[in-house]
Structure formats: C-alpha cells, structure tokens
Image (cartoon, rainbow, N blue to C red; front, side):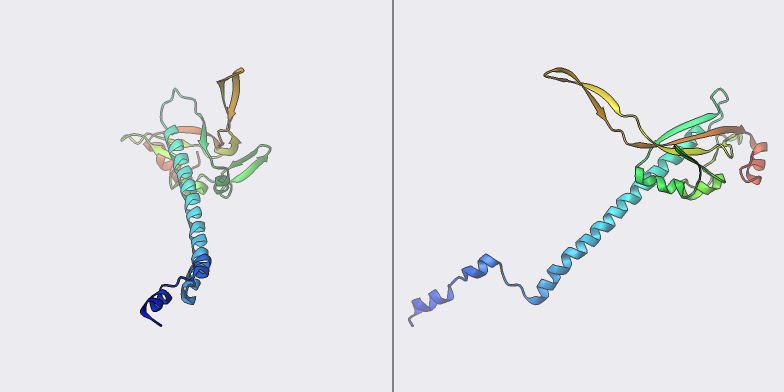
Length: 198
C-alpha cells in the first residue's frame, strides 16, 4: 500500500456516525439523562419562589393599606373600606387565620386581631400618629374581609364598522371593612392591656 492510499484510509469519514450523532461515552450519557430531571426540579423551585414573592407583596400591600387608613382625623367616617389586588390562589393565607361568618358571599372575620399577626406583622391593628401618643386603631369584632372579582374595565375602540365595545378583566381583590377608633396616650395602655378590646 503506497502513501497516498494510507492517507485516504486515515481521512475516511464515517457518514453513518455523523447522521446518528456522536456516540458518547457511557459516563457522559448518564450525565445527559440526569440533566433534564435536575432542570425540571430547579424549575419547580423557581415557580415556588414566584408564588412566595406574590404572597409577600400582597401581605405588604394589605399592611400598608390598613396602616394608612388609621389616622386621627375626626371629620372622616369611622367605617373603613379597602380593596387590595389579590391573586386568587393567595386568599388561603387569609382564610387560615380567620373564622367564616357567611357563605354567600363568603365572608370572614377574626376571633382576635392578633390572629392576623403572622400574615401582615405584629401590631398591624393600631398606629400611633404623633409624638403626643394620639393613636388610631381597629375596633375588635369589626374586621371583616372577603374575596371579590373586580368589575371589568369598559372602553370603546374605533373599527371599520364604527365604535366597538371592549371589556378587560381586572382580576380579583380582597375587600376589607372595619371600624376605626381614635384614642390618646391615656387610652393606649388600656387598649393594649385588654388584648385589643375597646
């Protein structure tokens, strides 16, 4: 065999192997098979983190909304009504700490105001508003809440046939209702000592 024939033999291409892909060593094939399972598991963890972030955001918005409504302006109505955007699957964190008082529509209340501490933080039910210790608080037995579908956003668009009506779903909300009380530093100690009783 001359040198030219030897060179052709060395350069021979296995077209069948190219069509089927390279034959990986057994150790590499095992790594490739385990990779997909690991990635699916990591994806599941990421999804759980997203759910936790949504719950955390909702809890923060609820706490801020309640605190903002606790002020000492006597000219405002003492009945407070709030509406906080609510991912529907998140409502369970509220039902777990409350007591259902009606089924149609489903409404919940709190046996004690402190029952909601784990959801939106300690001392969420009162706010000292100035350095003179004037404070506003949620009256015990008045705090009720329920989930509700927000009314759709209605608008009109121009089309070839004229104006057309369009409705956009705006998701769900947590409806909250409670009575606001007002006190001073002499009332505050009594309020705390009586476990948020009036």
